[in-house]
Image (tube, rainbow, N blue to C red; front, side, top):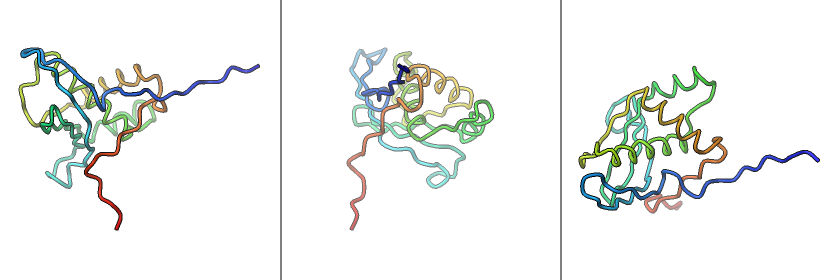
Amino acid sequence: MPQRLAYTLMAAMYEDFHVTDRWTGEDLHCRWKANIVAIATRHADAVDVRYEVNQRPVWIAMPCEAWVEQKKRTGHVITDQLAAQLAGHYLKQAIESGYDNGREMYTMTIDEVLEHLDVVLHEAGHTSKLPTLPANDDAQPVS
């Protein structure tokens, strides 16, 4: 009998996580809120991923060129889910390493995006196993 591939979604990875601040020991609750193309908001060639860290807004800016490089090197695209996960992984690492100093905006390089992407994909095993992004409470109702 052929063996079936089991695709199961992970309950949570980096869209909703807790991390301990390296310097204060404080438990920080980090929650993904949105992916926004930055050209519309700040005229930057980037995708801004918004997180709340203990209800404080934090933005992770990722250069659009990283999407192009990922397509060149693998033939695959960076999806919204993948972008949110790799930004969350970057944020978690920044907090654990003590790099987080309460800034509102962090800017990733192309190489950092690709490095964190590789780690997230390795952890998940496949993009089909990434958790779906939660609907947030500021979504607009249909009139």
